[in-house]
Image 1 (cartoon, rainbow, N blue to C red):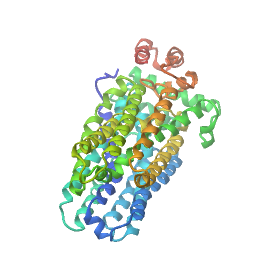
Image 2 (cartoon, rainbow, N blue to C red):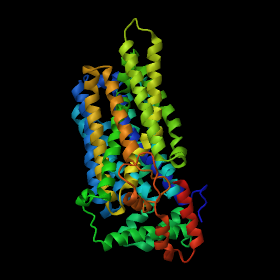
Image 3 (cartoon, rainbow, N blue to C red):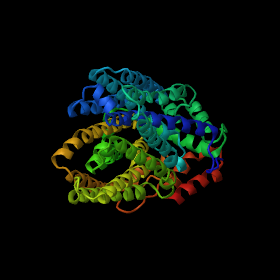
Image 4 (cartoon, helix red, strand yellow):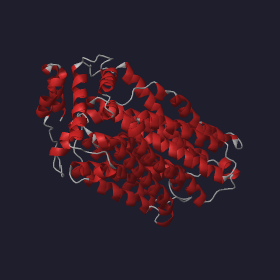
Length: 510
């Protein structure tokens, strides 16, 4: 039986691979924001206006939306890893165009192609991780990719700070070339990693599914009772769906009842994640620091590097808290704290606008609160906004639901990225009160409509959404684990006691 304190060799290898997937995504999302802060970049491209800069940012997001939808169309057909590998290749083509860019149109095309590749990777990475993770480690396992994404943001920020002292076009070309780091590492990974056991079961390859589960959770021991228990759950879920003639069509996502409820959560949670206003910091941190009176571009990049470094360290807490305390407490604490921090930033900018005569101390607090906001985000909504939608979706609809969820994430991202500069100009400091209001509203949605998913297998979540009320208030709801074990015991070769231990563990976590 798997020792909860250890991971199999296959789990470790898979985990490290997808950490690098996250670094790839982080490099491409943040590389342009850092390039914009360099006068070497703006001078080479004849000082692109706000519209051109906005297009460079937005085309990546549009590409991500397209890539996510395409990934959803092919993920069930070709497999999660095949789609991820294809996405990496597309991403590399886009990165090459950015490195070689000699005009704005080349930047446009490079960003669009990079976005398509990144969208495919972003769609299937959390999907794959949620499908291979053991229930008691799913929060930690899937959060690892977000930790490495934060590390990617920090690395590119420090590299940008170093290259900001390099003269001429070499500086920003080297920054764009950093995207190759993730691509090179990832290219070979898809050929050695195991396929998703749930995808194999959907393809009627149950024996292969069992072998993969054993490899992931028991170092290849197919007789391990927990492995057989989970294999039985997956098998039963697929068989029940087939018996009910449930088709994996897009319309099934909208079927009234548990499917629609789960799909709604998969759409709303990424919206909350993006409308916290995090991308106002991710994309426009130098502009925010400038509004706080910090004019030197070296200082702006340095402060951004410090912010992302602190965020990387703090994001490690999610590896512990999400499985220890549950998703709801972490998300509620995070969104409440972000609401307060936006209010404080808005008040400081209201009463201490950036002028030559304004005291530096209030502006120092603005920087501090921005750093705190980013840290709170990466410890809560940063990881959960991506992978909770993947775990709440039913098995036969997970790929399609994930495609819509990730595509909408890019669309929400597009809205924030396009409107934030306009808000800074039109309503100025009130922008932060606007985001505070969105965070406050999101707190209520999280409190009333998100059930606790801690410690449950993906198949046990089917039972959760069948029984938990739509308005969950403050309570947690138990899954009928006794009924589940009764149905699965025949698959465990009579090892009832050991499998029941897993059930008791699940109940103890609820």
